[in-house]
Image (cartoon, rainbow, N blue to C red):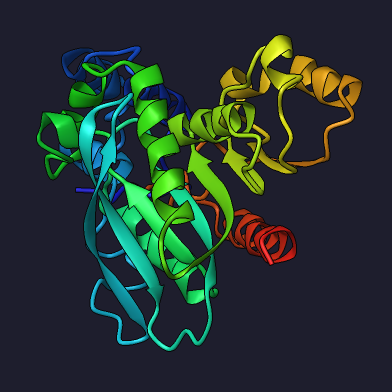
Length: 295
């Protein structure tokens, strides 16, 4: 059996996975369409393993990293889902109050990749919280397929309130200096944009390939923005020109980067859409931006 690689699989399978990941295809339809690319010694099962996340081998900062204090906390989201669990992480050796970052997951709950992102940011000198918007339904179920199905059962505006409540939790935390930003991916990118709309005291927002607010909503943004887009992401990028017009019309402080020849989800190192050079550059820009705006 031939092992799938980025070089020997049809690139259309990434578009197919994107449709599946964003609920345009049911799992049965996804597998049926994937079978069309099982040629030349490639099997459906090997292609399925190739495109699905590999969390076990992609974690960069372990939960028990001795440099961090990282554990789950509970907070209240009165306008959202009620009691919400999130992963709170901070440097163990912090000598003063820290700036805060809310880390917002994709459309499948708080999976290991997003927890890892929260810990990565904490190592840079921040106190971070990565909430699980699936908690009212039992929490991230341990795999992304079921996670996506669960998240479809929640209203996205109620989930937005859950992340706004996480902002408020950090704002009142004894180890936070009150300057708080947000970073989010895909669905979390939309949440990051909308938190900038809803929170006049948000200090910075970094949406990764996130859906854009309306022009009217954009006029309410006060926070500086760092916007990260994937060059091959036609679905999300379609909304960028109008968003940029609204940002300019309202004199909003923003920088936007479109990374050429990379796919939606390029920062997620657990899937083959990951592009290491672009992901590293985008992450360095994100950390530099937060260090500038939150201190």
